[in-house]
Length: 280
Image 1 (cartoon, rainbow, N blue to C red):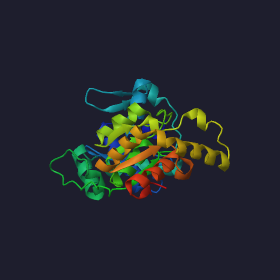
Image 2 (image 1 turned 120 degrees about the vertical axis):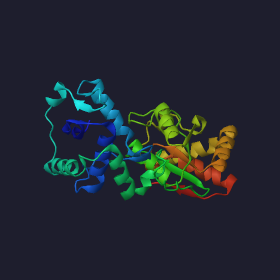
Image 3 (image 1 turned 90 degrees about the vertical axis):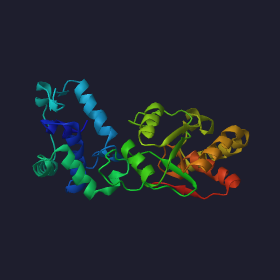
Image 4 (image 1 turned 90 degrees about the horizontal axis):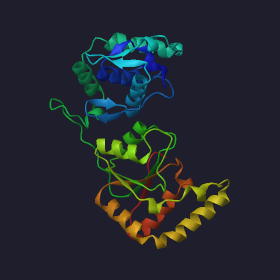
């Protein structure tokens, strides 16, 4: 839990979300190295991770939602010792001094004017929406390792991706947002189609003892040979790739250490498309 959330006494949810975004964008500290990332959502920049952590604070009794829709610290929350680096504390003060008196509507207008990318999913009819990009047809791949779910989904949106094809054998993750059910829900909220093709994954037991380049080579050779027996899954993947700009997704950040690259190389022989690795 980031102590940033306990440094505010009260705010409506929209204000807190926009203040956090502006802290990350307009200050020298950017909120710190592990601060929240944001995606374009219904009313501008939004962080699924920040929203989840706020809900956790409410559930654990550190914050509460008052009748006037304010998020405010409870007595327990006020008793917590908040330790922030001096530069971050100063930047929080600067953001609240500059934008603290802005209404929700004024905050949205200011952010949209200065950061037009975050208008692409706007629900507000008064705002001119930026055109959401659409990727050229190719076999895209991406790994979420080291990224928050907001950062990862923003990468897909900026790249023009409209469909996420999850090729993990067992799509669970301790990292928030990447468990199958959560990832599917968040994708759907951003108009990204989610599809899971477990038949194109590699069981975790087969990856348990990977410790050298030779072990990776042997695993991927075995996987490549086995793809010829997975025609139904391959046919499904090709159909999905052809109908929408789609990305093959697994965990590993380095595409050379992930079976998605072997899969993509196998598919280009049947589809005559190029491979593009996002975020690498």
